[in-house]
Image 1 (cartoon, one colour):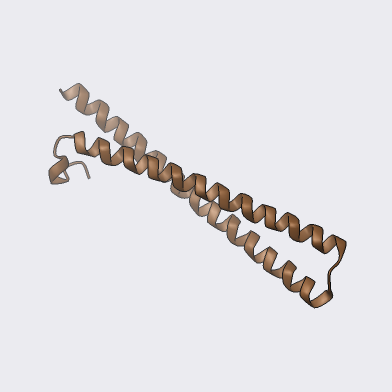
Image 2 (cartoon, rainbow, N blue to C red):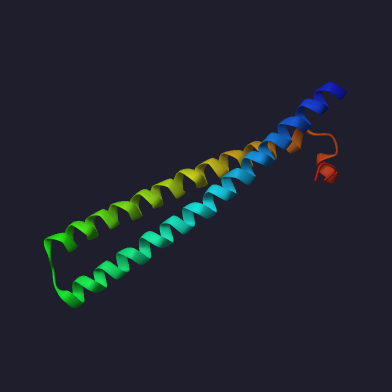
Amino acid sequence: MAQQDAMRLFERMRLVIALTEVNSHHLRGESRRAGAEIELACALASEKRDGVSPDGTRNIAQLRERLSDAERALQAIESERIRLEDELVNLDAMLPGANRGGWQ
């Protein structure tokens, strides 16, 4: 039983580390998305102020695509976070002392 408990504890540590990494990726992704939103807002304001141009239209299309990419990446990160959190909850339910919070 002690070996099984040790393996579960090791797995829990692996999951916590993975969640920490996912949270870090999420923060970077949020920054990436915010940057894309700001650049797009500036490009749209510039277009409104200066008028439509082929270069401006191309730039706006690229910025919209960049924003979409950033949002898709964040969705993937959120899905991974949910999966890891579910794994952690399931693992914690199997660990000794889980009902008493002994592994927290």
